[in-house]
Image (cartoon, rainbow, N blue to C red; front, side, top):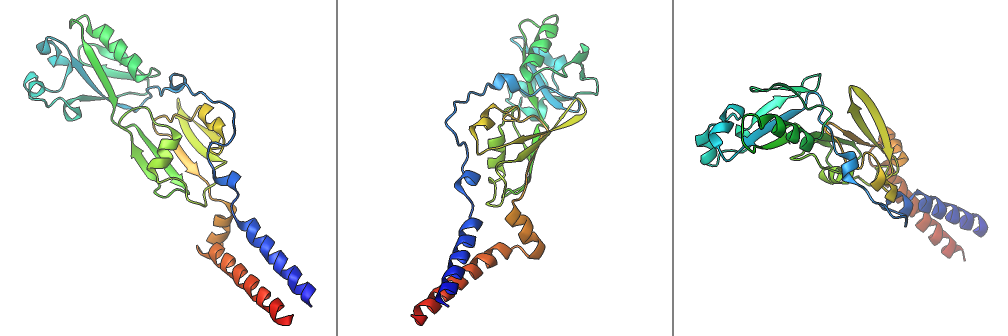
Length: 257
């Protein structure tokens, strides 16, 4: 009889240990391989439906008035922030309709490249113009097994997948860290990428730096999916039950000695 109780105790102990998450499943950036990620290789490009706030500056502020929504008096009063910067929507052909200049191709270029294109064209009207372009609708979505799923508006065009997960409160303990999906639309085509944030290889991924409208999805692990069938506390109850069985078995063995 003692042998049966001992075997049962050992089996229960093994089941409890096996249900615990392993270090390899939770710890980020494992491995010793060196990684160097060059942001320049993955800078987001302007796409159709992007909304760009464009402001023009110059030594002769009067010369910039036709190209800015605000007047020279607003600019002198320090009211030259985004509420007064003119916003342009990129059409399906990648163009914006700019005052005096007409249709300007900006789609497919980075934000800095688009600024240089406008500077060159504005030089015909303004001496040494300065151009500042900012996205007003650069947003990403993080869904699935994270603490605070939702969409986030980014003030610039540089955000990593790790920063996005941080904005969402990081993964829950039930999130699968080895198979995070990034959904990206390019030229009207949706592409999916799967990354493993437990490996340093994530730093070399083409989706380490996110692009506008990217969707990051964290899938639930098996424990989470199993628990959803019978209730959110299913895994906890199983663990508690296992502990109770182990303690009971131990007491029974001691009493039979």
